[in-house]
Image 1 (spheres, helix red, strand yellow):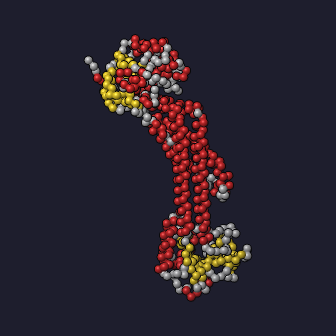
Image 2: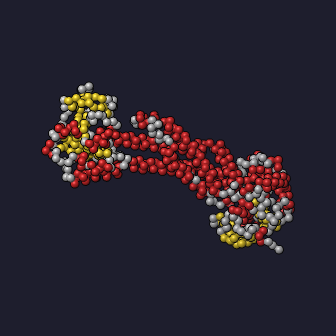
Image 3: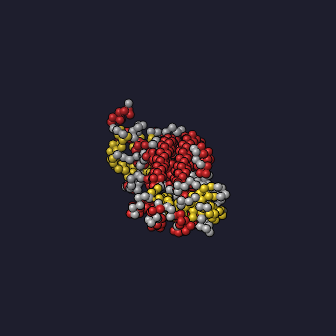
Length: 222
Length: 383
């Protein structure tokens, strides 16, 4: 039994950078729960996440996000959490202020923002660092803070682009614990990764290499 | 609304932080703004002073005054006088008619020879307010050498008569007179008038209404033509007014061109620096957009920064121009009386705003490259 209003549906999705095709008529349906999107570097995992987020526009095909709409500004504001590979935090704001800003933009009340900020900072082991600016934190702490910020709106769609790459085991375990047992209910979580440590989590898998056009596959293998 | 406040607060911190991080970029924009604003303000002040100087000169020369003269020999005394002929125009302008008499007068105190002019009843009415007071004898002694309202006896054709001194009014400068003047009523001049005289008529119109002056000149020409008074001559300020109008038009055009050039230069400089700063900062801006922050608010940050810098530059330029006003324009040769800012203040907020609006338009234009850059999809910037 599936509920299409909670799923992400990609239908005939195509996208390219200039003349380089990255996705060619890609079809997929992502249901609530954790899905690991695996593949070579440059195979288009990040591009897929950006398309789902509405940060890129497909040249062909359509995308439906939970709620049955295309990914637009309101979806980005209220229902989407996205963690990028690099420079995720606003450098001039404290961690608490980073979370405040995103929560408030999502339309949460002041009380909700306060409660959730405390909850997710604690869950990611950052409660003692709440009033520090990102530049005073380690890379792992910054990445955890970015995940906390993505979770504050308890999004219907959580997209993480290489969230554990370059992180030590301790930071990785904190993130894995969160992904394993603290995802918001009915949240479709896509993690683009080639970090094998995440394989131990219960997940759906999507091998993205099989969508590569043959010639790019050969280039990637060479 | 709270979200907007939070973003605005963050962006204001961002502006301040970038100012501290790159003071050179801020100072460059301020310096360019101050220089352009000061140049425009100086140019405007120069035009204003030049215009006022010309207006004063034109007023002294009688820009609203028409002068008609006709020689009346003894055998043509039966013709209607010019003053009577032009009487219909008295409703549109002050009409003063004088006749220069073939007699001389002498100021016994100063030993100075004077011209004698006679005026009719219709001119008496117009003359009284223009000369401020009416002496009991009806005889005015117009001299720049004595204080006004002084009772003085003047020898007119061998007879001493009571007069009152008056300072020469500006319209008198239009009459081709080289000596002090005694003005007497017609009743006193009847005997002399029969010997022939030179008739002067002055039509005093508002010089601020050049079209009215031109219409008046046309009407006077028509009246002379209808009455076939080809011996009458008219001196009209139309040429002078045309020149003044051309000067005003040139001034407006020049100011507009200078303003446009200033605004365009400011847009180029501010735009170039803002674009460079945006490139350094585009990841953060894209991050804010990825949270759903409105593009308009992000664009407003750049517009606001340019406006703040321009306002600071405008204030500094105004202070600079006001401080250097007197020495600069005295050096340029303007009369000292014109340089008193209590008389003409080119740096009052009204005229300053007229110039700064061009620069403000330039500042607004400078965010256009940012607006274009903000159209780039977030996904192409964020990694």
